[in-house]
Amino acid sequence: MNILVIEDNPDIVANIYGYFEPLGYELDNAPNGFAGLALAMEREGEYDAIILDVMLPGLDGYQLCQKLRKELKQKTPVLMLTARDSIKDRVDGFESGADDYLIKPFSLIELEARIKALVRRSKDQHIATTLTFGPLRFDPDLHEASRGDTPLALTPTGYKLLKLLLMAAPRLVSRQSLETAIWGNDLPDSDVLRTHMHSLRQSLDKSFDKPMLKTVTGVGYRLVDPDV
Image (cartoon, rainbow, N blue to C red):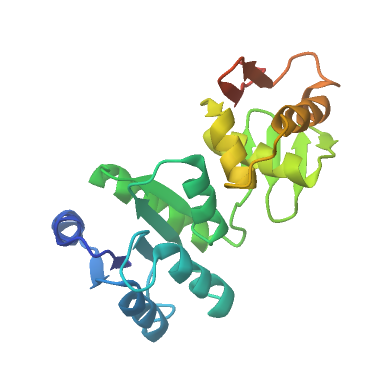
């Protein structure tokens, strides 16, 4: 398996090489975003996966991934490495075109497992982009959501909130994380998040016996599997 490692930290690069090469992997390293982009272009179709650091000199990981996806139309699986662990950072990573996300410090065993999973999926004729949790399914590309066999009609903000909650499920997502991810620094004056969450709950839970959207008063929201 051929892997392009775009990472500027020499210690992390050495650890990745030290783990993967004895297992038979072939690795190339680019120490900055522009070098990584050049290698990806030069050897297009030769890499089975790309390990991409977010904080790179010159061209950061988000920008690089966007170029790979939108300008070069490359479909090579991309796993992002980052020290950032906020919901917004993860959303930015996925929206730039990344397929998976691993927080530093990370286990090399887990990194290998995730790379293998990405490569397996990429070799399928259909690459699963649908987010699932229990009976809940959401396709971010098509903006189609369903609970079991029942389609869910959501507002544009409702789809964004559902995506954030699904990405974290079953963990709690704080109110502040949701507000920042949706509105950035331009937070609304009123408690508009409560209104949007009420609308989401109406679509997600109203027609069902067991609710999936739970409120932790004063803290945030989480999804629960009604069948567990």
